[in-house]
Image (cartoon, rainbow, N blue to C red):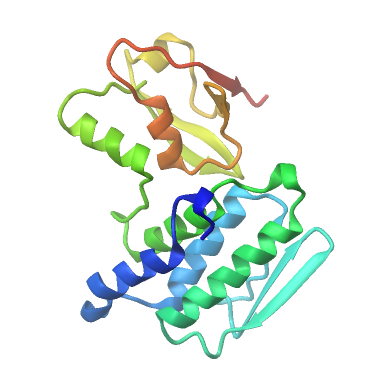
Length: 212
């Protein structure tokens, strides 16, 4: 992946090969499905053709007027999956206008395929991992809300009673457009949580859209 994305798909897949493949947990097609699901949820213009029963023998992607197809018969291992995902990432990036290209497309795809592995696997950036470690030692406070990706938006799934989020008037269903000075348009949930959490007593600004 490009250096600015901060993640290498090859590195993630190599770790999976070392840790999960010997135990027979890896199914390349299922990992591809997870990566595409994450990408299509975060990038509304991206359309993934899904025949009944799954991807089938051909993967077909559309972004606006652009379309590309890949044969999946040779998708039998992690090297083939890595090569395919690199081509998919390149197609998506080249098909979107510069202002709509996710800054972390490689991380988005990697996070999706990890989540397809099992419910407990996810990709954490260095910042999100550091925040997670701090939270484990009691140094970090949150706003008391659960976030999900919903129809391409970063949305509030639930607000905890008596939490800072509830006191600020945040409601379930609210869409988060901006965290501090950073747009939340294409942010994975873990990245967003890393930006929201901080030392107890610090403040964070959220730009929220409340659907009618």
